[in-house]
Image 1 (cartoon, helix red, strand yellow):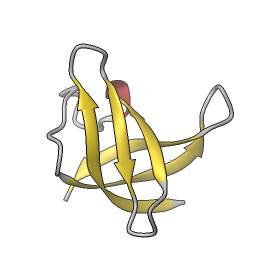
Image 2 (cartoon, one colour):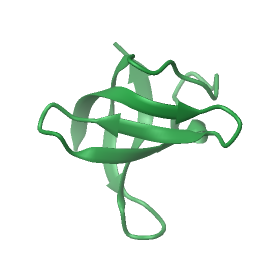
Image 3 (cartoon, helix red, strand yellow):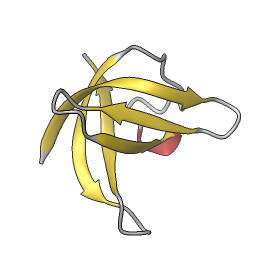
Image 4 (cartoon, one colour):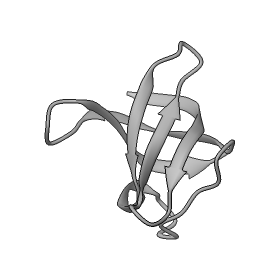
Length: 67
């Protein structure tokens, strides 16, 4: 399912962070999920991506693109 949100945290050294949707849901973000291959995204950036279930069963966002 396609979702929009704002990057609310991102640690470049670890390569992961969090996207918060307008409904307040927090989705895990890993740097390899960034569609353009850059492996980094700015905190505060508006993004869109695919909501999916991650390896540990938690919701995460993939195929992330900046808006």
